[in-house]
Amino acid sequence: MKNIFDQHWRRYDAWYEKHRFAYLSEVEAIKNVLPKKGKGLEIGVGTGRFASALGISDGIDPSIKMAKVAKGRGINVKIGNGEALPYKDGEFDFSLIAITICFVEEPEKVISEANRALKDKGKIILAIVDKDSFLGKFYQQKKSTFYKEANFFSVKEAATLLREAGFNKFSFHQTIFNLPEEVKTIQIPIKGYGKGGFVVISGYKRS
Image (cartoon, rainbow, N blue to C red; front, side, top):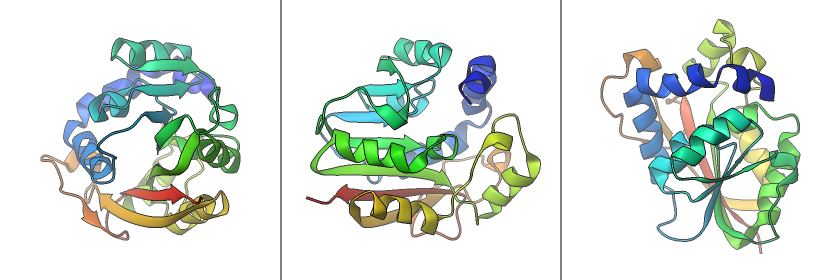
């Protein structure tokens, strides 16, 4: 999986410019649940598009080329995998996993590691393309360079992953109500799921 992103990092990063309003809509949905303060980590930081826009200080990614871009955007990046985070227990106040969960080999282990690296009652933010949404179905049929390798999750499946890893008190926010190329303004996120293609699930580490 790392090789795909190393080979096509320019195409990956260019997507956010080409679909700027879809990207900004996703940022707004994450902002709804992002803590106002505290030390944050983005697991699967990529080129730093989300971390830089959201003020998240730290990130980790297996792709050296993408990490280099993220560093240029001011993120403190480490090279590594979500399944074995190179951080101490309880080091972070919150953690973001945006889209990444559908590309990792062991999603349960990534969520478990995120839990370990969070402080007691720390917050996790998991953003996914909902497998059951119009957008999830579109990507599964399209089989693009990146998404042909993806293992999509439904909201319920993603919430189950979080619950089994020791998180609770979930909230759900959704956005992207048209295909990304059709989004011409920032789409205001709404609570719940079932309408938007991009869903943000947040929860807290059980103490």
